Amino acid sequence: MFLSFNLGSAMANKGPSYGLSREVQSKIDKKYEPDLEERLTDWIIAQCGDKVGRPEPGKVGWQNWLKDGCVLCELINSLSGANKPIKKIQSSGMAFKQMEQISQFLNAAEKYGITKTDVFQTVDLWEGKDLAAVQKTLMALGSLAVTRDDGNYRGDPNWFHKKAIENKRAFSEDQLNEGKSVIGLQMGTNKGASQAGMTGYGRPRQILNNP
Image (cartoon, rainbow, N blue to C red; front, side, top):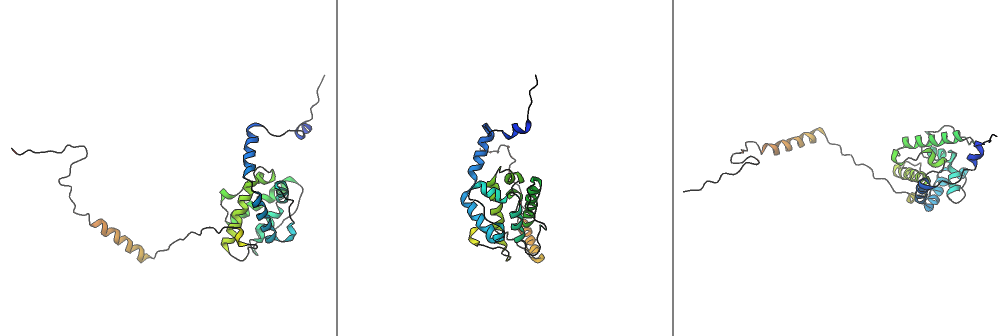
C-alpha cells in the first residue's frame, strides 16, 4: 500500500511559526511604528503625486502598496531631478520582477547617499520579514533629501530631521608649516635636558648618613 504525498498541499497548509522564530518575528513586529507609516505615506504621495495611490491602513496594506517596487522606484526618481536612476518602472505580478525593482530602488538609494546600515534587505519588504527596517530606510532617505535642499524634495520639511553635515576644515600650506614650527619649538625646549640625579626604575635610592 502506497501513501501519496502532495508537497504543494503540505506547503499551502503550513501553519504559523512556533518557538524561537515566532518570538523573534514578534519582537521585529513591535518595532514597526504606525505613526511612521502614516507620515511616510503622506510624504511619498506628496513627493510622487496621486499616481502612486494610497495604501489600505495598516501594516499589511502598507506592505502590499510597496511590495512590487513601483512606488519606491517612483520615489527615488522624484528625488533625482532630471537624472533619474531607474529608467523603466513596470508593474508586474511576477515575484522575481517585483524583487528586481525593489533591488533597483535599494541600489539607487545607496548611490543617493543612504548608508548600508540604513538599507533594508529585499526580503524585509517582499516577505514582510522586517517592515520596521523599511521604515528606517525611508526615514533616512527623507532626512537626506531635506538636508540636500536641492529643490527636489516635496512635502513638509518638518517630517524629517536634517542630517548633521561634516565640517571639513581646509588648511593652507603656510598654516600647516606654521603648525609644524610651533610643534618643533615646543620640542626644542626639552633639548639639553639632563637625566642626572634621576634613578632608574626599580633601583633603590642611596641615602648617605653623615657621621
